Each structure stands twice: as C-alpha cells, then as structure tokens.
Length: 131
Length: 353
View 1 (cartoon, each protein chain N blue to C red):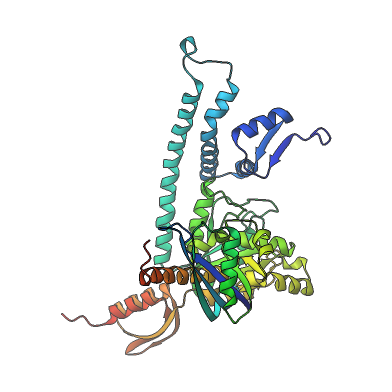
View 2: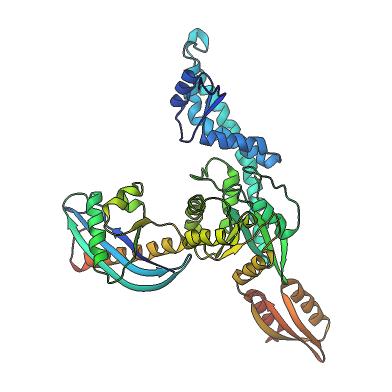
C-alpha cells in the first residue's frame, strides 16, 4: 500500500478573456491495481489572463496539494506537464513527484480527472462564466 | 565506422528518408532505424502464410510515404518517358498501393475468421486468458509449461508472430490460453498487423497474465512494466491482471524479495514461476482460477426422463456438475456461468400454455 496524491487540471484552453482552470487533488492509498482508500479531496479554481506555463501549473498543483492534510507522492499525467521528461517537473516540485505508472495510479488519475472536470463545469455554470 | 568496420548502422530514433539517405551516403553502408530493424526481424521469423503477408504489408506501408522521395533521390539525373516528360515516382507509388490493397483484403478475411472464432468460444463457455508481456520475457515457455505442449520457444526476440491458442482445464473449468506477440517500447501498432491482432486478443480476454523477466535489473523491469501498462490501460478497464514473474530460478529468495520491494507498486497479483523448471505452476493456476469471472452455484431438479437426461448431458458440457442423485427426479448440484444457469432454469420451468 502506498500513499499518493493524484492531481489533474481541467480547462487549460482559452475561453473568453483568459484561462479558467480547476485543479483537483485527491489523497489516496493505493495498491498495485486498486484504489484502496480515498482519504481527502480538494479542488482549487484559478483564473489566468495568459496561457499557463509549466511553473504556473506546478504552483497550482502545489497549492491544491497543500490544502490536503495528508502526505504522499504527487502523481500526474505526462500531458499535464507538457510532456516534459520527468526530471524537469520533478526538480520544480517541493514534494516527491512522479508520472502515473501502475494500474492503480492510472485509475487515480481518472478519478481526479472526473472530479476536476465536473467541478469546473459546475463552477462555470454557477459563476456564469462565459465559455 | 572506420574503427569498428561495421556493415550496418542502426538508429534507435525514427529517421526520415532524407536523413537515412544522407547518413548512408556519409557512412557508405546500410543505415536503418528501429522500425526497420523490427521489420527485418519479423521478416526473418515469418513462416506462415499469414505472417508473411503481414510482414509484406508492413514493409509496403512503411515504404509508401518514402517511395516518392527515394525514387526522386535515386533518379535525380534521369527523366522517364518520351522526351523525359514522365516521372518514375507516380508509377512506383501506384504499384505499392495496389499491392497494399490486395494484401489488406486478404488479411481482412483472416481477421473476420478470428472474430467469429472468438465469439463462438466465448459462447461455448470458455474463459479467455491471454499471455501478454515484453518480447523475450518467456511467454512461449510459460505457455508450454501451462498447457504441456511444445510451442517453439527460444531465447530470441519475437519467436511468436501469430497468436496461438490452446485449451486448458482449470479444476473443471474450461479456459483458452493465448500466447501473443511481445511488446516493445513505442509499440508501432501500425507497423505490423501481428501487433494489432495480438492486442485485440488481449483486450477481449477475461484475464491477462502479464509476464515479466524477473532476472533483469529492477529498473529495466519497471520500464518494461510501464510500457506494458501503457499499451494495455486504455482498453482493458476492469479486466484483472496477474503479474507473472518468470525466470525466478536464476534468483535466490533475498534477491527476489529486494526486487519485489522495488517493483511491487507496479505488479498487481504477483505470481512467481520458473517456466523452464516448471516451478510455481500450481500456485499460478490457483491464482488464475481465483481471478476468472465468477461462476454461480445452484441446485437443479430435472425430470427423470429422456428430456431430463439430455439436459443433464448439456449441463456436463457447459459447467461443473458437483453431485448427481438419481431418484424420481434427478437432483444436480451445479456450477456454471450465470447465463447457463438462467437458461437451464428457463428450460425446466413448465410452460404456461
């Protein structure tokens, strides 16, 4: 069993006037092929006027993960880090970081992807942000 | 080049036609990239009609986008046709495309046969199990060890080019085990149809045995597992995976423990075997049975008549009969797939007409 923090960001495409992104982070305990326990989930929306750069993405993920009261290696999709080789984002994070590898980690990423996507859709509706 | 006297230069990365041409001009020998190397290995191994067609198709497909460039590079000075107004490029490309179309239609019909065979096997109550894994992990050896047969198994890459299937008896349950073509990194699915048919075979199975060579360095194992998961993940949602660590005869207990510590997070349901020595087969089979789709139990009461007897023999074919008691009626304790049990119960209910 391993403690991980799975993260995913939705909304990295331009809508009217800028970028409305929602990051979701989930503190999970996983085995090799199952999510064994979901401990805590947090989301963090952010508005950017310019296209997000890699440091922006890293900052957003760190801020979201800091809201959690659990520790763990941050796991993200390679695409979220603009397909950079592992050592690039790894050197930018203050915590342990890795790309998804095992079946459980992939499931975890799927989970947070659904969370961030639906949270963003809800927020866009509620705040009446024009997409 | 000069110091080693090499006859061939192989690049790990994909090369464009012009790069290939220029580098081979500089080196003065044949230059190929990884994909061409795979094609060459495939071509050497291809023995059946189908695999030969596949290799031919892959070679042609690889060549088409390059055909124009190659021909124009080679025939820079010449002009074809009357007064040099024609060109060589078009006719060569046309030839290639015609050959591709012919081979594709031939392979298509073979694929349809595969599909209907698979559906038929599933309907007959066979559970489908497939062996997946990196090339040279020992899939064929394990296949032989499980089904006690001798499929060609060698210490080389791509021994298996066409998926091979055999029946297997797992404590009364019938299963079909399929040996498949090995994975490689950056798997070029488009390259060889063998990959495609292999992947289809894997995606549609009820259980996947992911074979890993445990005698390699942990970093290599991790890398290979990661490649395998990458290839499988998108399409196998929910299908259980057993990680079979093969070649354990080359390691002692402490080495195995330290490897497991490092790769544990990537290896679901690990089973340790040595296919060559036949160690760990019982445990592996137990693990397989544990992960097969669940069968349900039921007690049936059949009429002791000709119809009842024919129903009983059908039950024997489709599942496991645990106990039979002949009396006024035939009482059967039965285990099978839910669909079979539902059908049996529907047949037993008196019709309301």
